[in-house]
Length: 268
Image 1: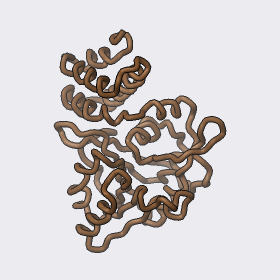
Image 2: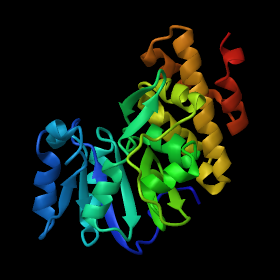
Image 3: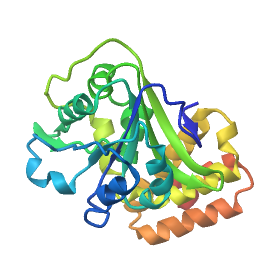
Image 4: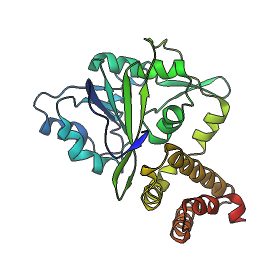
């Protein structure tokens, strides 16, 4: 299943890539050192063009033998910090070097930008919906690897989305990753989209979507994404957009009715 309330069984090494910028300075490593007897970590931006800001960027924690770190802190930190858990046979150094080689992305106008591939919306599009082509997915993930990220919280617990990588060996070329124009536009349209994640969790629980086909949750994401874009176009404040969607969920007696209520036609 692509969506679940637990991680897949750990087969190899397990790492936790977490952004530190939106958490109190030093909190992640302070708590990591308090729980782990032999802490091992690497800064994602170490040795890259973003080295100057590495200490306020994402950090890669080795939690292979220390699942308590995730269990103790993930629920609190997921409200503030983007993160992804990576199961892979790679060593800590090899994984950091692979991820560091995939930090840039081609942007419109022949430019380049920083790809924050640990953010949930980016992960959902690039890996969950496979908008990153197979060659670039392999360059980012390597083979025999699973990435799991917290999507939202529901009454059932934290809902995770995950993607398994299959295929042959792939060595990052160092060239920027490429996204088609539609995917780049979708990413640009997801500003503040995280404000809808509590609603996503409520809808998943209310309509029991974890017991249905994965396409149901993906369809819900797309309906909320279109709703978010449409309400921007209607100049609705983000607070009002969230409150209106919450009202639609309360008055919908079926999943299909809720999806229909989010459409532009239902709002105009």
